[in-house]
Length: 579
Image (cartoon, rainbow, N blue to C red):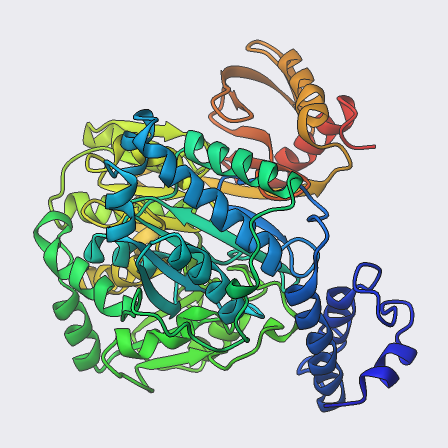
C-alpha cells in the first residue's frame, strides 16, 4: 500500500486530511479507475490506499446520511460512506426489526409480510447476503448483529445474487431477506434490498413503513450499538447465525417446480455439456455471478463456456457495471471468433438480477427476450396463460398475446408491482433486463433468464436472433429505446412539474421528427405513456432510485426511435424540467 499522507497531498482536490465529510474518496477512485483500461499498477495501489480511508469513514461516520433514507422501487441506495455506512445500515435494520415487532398489535402487517407474529418472524429468520461491493462483509455483519440481538435467526449466504437469495428465502422458509446491493449502480453506490416471506420485492406499504421508521430513528440518533460493529471480513460467531449454500437452494427450487414452468435444469445443463456445436460467453462484470456460473453449469469450461470478468474487482474495471451494448462488446468479440453453430452471449449485473443477450450478430434486450420467453414457454412448453410486463416495456409481447388469445397485464415500473399476478402470468419481465417465470421466485433473476436462453436455443435449433426474426415475421417488428436525463428538481417539486405533461392528452398533435402524430391513448399508471395512432409511443416518468427523469420510446420503424427520443426531450424542455 502507498503512503496515505502522500496520496492526500497529491490529490488535495479530493482528500482533506482527517475530514471524511469533506473528502470525496469515491470521486477520486472513479477518476483513477476510469483513467485507463486496464487500470495501471500505480493507480491500483493508490485506489487501495483510498479505499482504506473510505473503510474508516464507513465504520466511523456518525453524521446523518447526506440523502434522506428512502426505499424506492428496488430498495435503498446511496453513496458508500456518506449515506451507506455502519451507522445508517444499523439504523435501517433496526427499522425493520421494529416493523416486525409491531405485527403483534398491527394485524394489517401480517398479510403484507407473510408471517403471523413477531415470534414466528424471529424463528424463521432472515436470509442475509451482499454483492461484490466494498465493505459488504462488514455491513452484512452489522445487519446480522442487529438482528441477532433482537432475537432473529440469520441464514448467512455471504456474497450471492438477488435471485438466488430470493430462492433461499423460499427454500429455507425464512421470514425475509436482506441483500446489501445497489444493483447495477456505479462503484460509488451501496444499497439495501429487503424482500418479504414470498421472496419478492416488498409491497409499497412495507417500504413506506421501513422508510418512516428509519427516518425517525435517524432523527433520534438511535439504532447503533458498538457490539454491532465487527471487523471487516469476520463472521459473527453466534449460534443464531447459520451459513447456507444459497445456490443449492436455487437449484432445488428449480427442480421442485419443473412441472410448473417446464424447465428441467438437469436436462438443460446436460444438453449444454454434451453439445459439440454451442458456445456460451457469460460476462459477470466482476459481480456476484462470477461465483456461480461455472458451478451452475456443472463445471463446464471452454470451448463451450467462457466466463469474462470473473475476478475480484470492486471498481468494475472503471466501467458502469450494467447490461449494455458497450459492455457486451467483449462477448461479441469472442463469439465472432467461434466456429460453433449456436452462440449465446450474456452479460449480468453485479447482483445478478438483470441479464442481456447477444448471438454475436444480434443484441437481444429484455424488451425482445421477455416476449420470446413468453412465446417459447407458451408454444413449446405448452404453458398457457397471460404475460405480465411493465408499462415501459415493448408491445411485442402484447402482439404475441393478442394472437394467442391471452391477456396482458401491463403494470407500473418495478418488479414489486407484479405481486397481484404471481402464480398466474407465465412470464413476468421489465424493460430494464429483469425477468422471472411461473413457478419461480417473484423476483427478477438473471439465472432463470440464462437457463431459458440455453433451453430456447437447444430446443428450437435457432440462435436467439433467428428466433426473434421468426417471431417478428409473425407478430410484427418493434424498435424500443430508452434514455434518461439528470434533473435538479426532486420529490414533490419534480412531480408537480411533470404533471404539466397532462396537456398532452388524447387527440393532441406532437411533432415527431418531420411528422405530426396524434395521441390515440394515454396510460398514466406510472408516469405518462402516450401512444400514437400508428402504434408508436413514448413514456416519461421520474426515476425511483436516482435524481433523473427517464423516458422510454418504441417505434414501428428503426429510424423512428431516435425521433421519439428527441420528441420526449422536447416535451421535458416545454414543461421546464430540462433547461
